[in-house]
Image 1 (tube, rainbow, N blue to C red):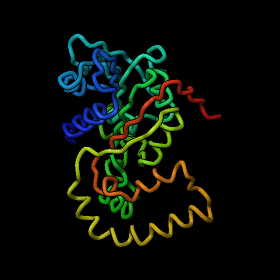
Image 2: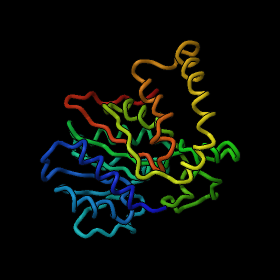
Image 3: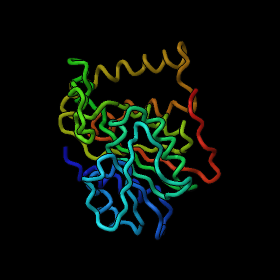
Image 4: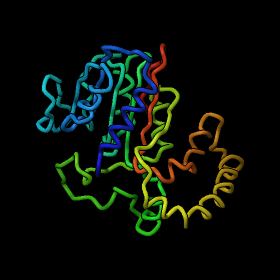
Length: 256
């Protein structure tokens, strides 16, 4: 799928969240691919970039170091609190344990730094309809067996709804997750016309049951639960989630 809008959304989110006037800051792009995001970012922000990827042979940005890393088994090969901006675009859906990766991202992010993560939106109306009729979310279809092209759509092994990505960032130690999207998907607008009455009629019952009977909704998580019924989630093609590492933030502890 086209990535131009995704890169633009990542850059916009980074500009919004990073301190005004940050010059010469350090940037890490995880799963950098050929390096297109780094190339576009360097024209918009005065940052010094580094990259890491499993398929380092594909990286082609001269003068930018690219480290080899297997995100399923290895830690990020960088010291603590190293980067002012960490981008992870269309990567988390390819890894087995995205929560462990986000803990590593927290570790290498400097205090006051920003992380921007993108992943296919499995909650837009098009994806909800596809899941209803097939059991497969959009861009998460049947997978090839023993596939070594981990960067392809055939490597999409982990669908991540917005709530769980925001929750994972908070669990890792980041603060203030914010959502944006890369573009409005026309097919989702089409299906929303038919699904909206059902979705919004059921919303009240869902929220009431979760709040009063199951008690899963709390003051801390309710804003992120509510986002699942929002216009951006219902029509956005790709979710772009940014968060900040507050000064003095405590390191995340791995789950037992």
